[in-house]
Image (cartoon, helix red, strand yellow):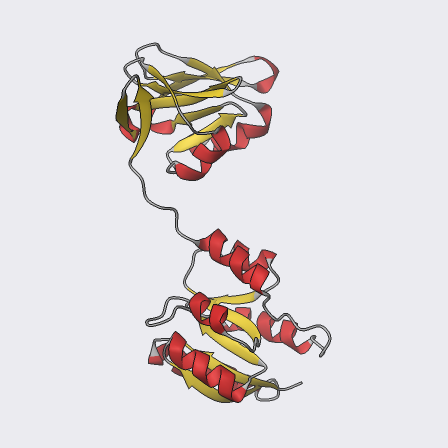
Length: 253
């Protein structure tokens, strides 16, 4: 099957390189157009109704996702992205193919093989649901530098470097500072896992620690560890078995 194909990227050099790469697959791709931004892409897709598009994500006027959300006709989408290896798992999990910039021919070979195996009844056209899922999964975390907590009638702003650890106790989650103070937060442990920077690691179902404040590890029973913190209380926090890998990866043990 030969796919009527459109290339959409805001960098002319990237489009030229893609054209050169696809020239080796003339029996698979018939390039019928190209666009340099999301708005141009939207117009040419609606006009020419291609089978397939190679789509960049970060583009002026309309991003790749914004363009897709406006389409009334949805072709097969192969994303061309500069997102890192972690982020692009979002594409894999939603059965949408991707090419990571700079594109390697060996990786393009796999994309071509996947496309050649498709039949009219087995297309991987992007649904609105999978588009939303991908968009949410690769959306950058909002960068935050502190956590707010209530203390009587006041709202305190606690900077990350002042925090030793978070610990859940029944229905509350407590923020513990390096100075030994403790405050109730409005967050759950799961919510904090999503909000906090990479320097905070979850060591058990009920505890997240600031890795920059770990003083030492003590071997505990059943293969567990006690994480000794550099706080005023010299807190000792027990690891959970299912979270060992988090700690070992960080501490290289």
